[in-house]
Image (tube, rainbow, N blue to C red):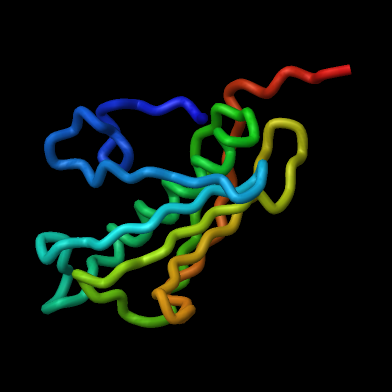
Length: 136
């Protein structure tokens, strides 16, 4: 199980206003979470604020890095908003490591609805602060 910061706005159990997300790890380079965002995450009417969607994508891609054994920080993130995300709707957020070059990790992410509609996609570059031990 990847390391968790208990005060993180996304996954921290001790953050009173945090989302308290839990993650699954379908593959060694992938992380996934599901969330239903309440109305106080609105940006306009019943739509989720785009910054909140970017935060979710950043978090799940970081968790993919951690799952693969890297402690890494975001160097760059690009988000593409495809369709509006509505509050009080179940969202699935998935992040995957797509390439590794020494300490540089390239990732991708997406947010989908239960019926498979892609609402947002992202790519990001992470810089590893620590790397996994090499096993012989």
